[in-house]
Image 1: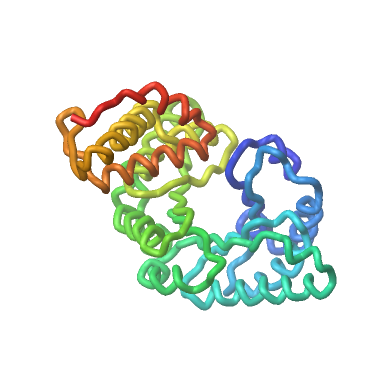
Image 2 (image 1 turned 120 degrees about the vertical axis):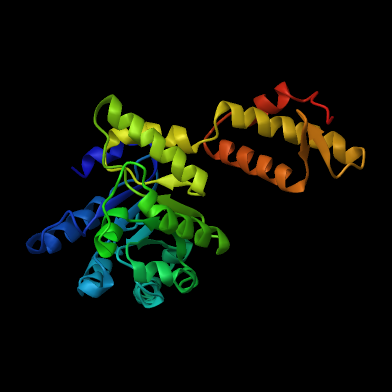
Length: 300
């Protein structure tokens, strides 16, 4: 099962030690993941993450002690984060392991810092988001775990997802307020067939509209749709290129605000355009070609 992931082309693969592993096989799973992440990196995976067991379970320290021996661990996914203390605990364990490796090998200093991704799964976590976001310098993102959140609040998940609107908005907003790189939306549990793919697309676009910049996938068939939805569309890319090309000319004319297609363009809109082009470059889109297409765009 682990070997199948080597063929993925994704931003991050999370190898699970929590819910998908029965209590009697936790030790075996730790060893398997550690050995797997000691192998050469897969070229199509940008980050290797490991979801450990919750701090409250008493198993997190053993998980970290084992998987941090592997050189190719980029991130730790911390489940059931309910307060800042959970992330502080994981950070302390990582710092100690890093110090221990430094005393054993000077090459450890060249390794990139391990990132933390916090799973928000409860009402308590939602009310403590600000403290959680400030808990660790290693924190890189927040992930919304809808099913556990629904369990905590005795909610029934519906196709509209309106029961999660407050939680999703709060998580996306907190991530942005604290300048976290990632805000990852809920899992789409429907993925088989055309109907499942359409549901996935709708959920992706809804999450993107709320401010999330990624989505959890539970099956390889979901990856392409998620990547397509969260990448800038052709229309967004062309709009952003037109804005930036026209803004270059507006700057030379000393115009801080101008119009395009009858709509006012000012600094926030230009900033949005820059953000879209930056994301497009990260998605390996040919931004320079699109800019060249619109090099003659004039501000109105």
